[in-house]
Amino acid sequence: MMRWIGWLLAAWGWIVPAGVLAAGVATVQAGDRTLTVSFDGPDARVDVGGIGQGYLLMRDGKLYSVMRAGGRPLVMDGGAMARLLGGGSLQAAPDMILSLTRIEPTGARETVAGRAGAVYAVSYRDEQGRERAGQGVLGKQPEVRELTRALGRMAVLLQAAAGQPADGARQVLDTLEEKGLGLLAYEKQFRVERLAATPPAPGSLDLPAPPTQLPPELGQLLQGLGRR
Image (cartoon, rainbow, N blue to C red; front, side):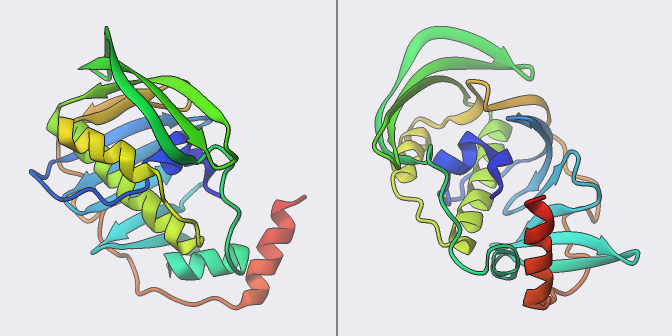
C-alpha cells in the first residue's frame, strides 16, 4: 500500500522534532508517481498524480484521506482508511529499512530543484535481511528539511495506521537531524523536481469536512476492484 511514497515511506518514517518551521509547495517524483506536496508547519497535504480529486491531509498530528463523493468531500482518518482497504495489518514493503549501515558524503555535489546539495552514499539492511546500497542528494536549506519532515511525519502515520513498525528509520533521521540535512533525491525512487518556499494556497490545508466511517462491505468491494 502507498508504494508511491517510495524510499521515503521505507526509510523516513519518524516524527522529526520541530525546529524552525518553513512553508512551501513542492513537486516530487516518487517512482512512477508525481506528488504535489504542500506544507506549512505541522500540517501538510499530498496530491498524487492520476488519483483524481483524492489527496492525503495531515492536520494536528493526524492523517486523513480526502475524496469526493456526489460532489461533496468525503474524509476518513488514517485508521478508518487502513481498515477500509486492508481490514487489519497491511504487509510491509520488502525494501523497508531494518538497520542503517552507512551514510557518508562522497565529495560530489549536485543541484536538485535549484538547491545545492551533497551526494551521500547510503547502505542499509532491509526487512528481509538483504544488504542494499544507493546514493542520495541531501541539502541544508530550511524548506528542504521541512519538506522531508512533513513527508516523514505522513509516512509514519501511514505505517502506524497499517500496523507497520518504523524501526531502523530512526537511525537515518537521527543522523540527518544532527547534520541539519533534508532529502532532495535518492536514486530513481525519489526526486524533488520543483520547490517554492512560499505558503500553500489559503484553505488548502484545512479539513474540508468532518471524518466519517464507511461500511466494511465497501472496503471489500474496493479491494476486489483493485485486484482486477
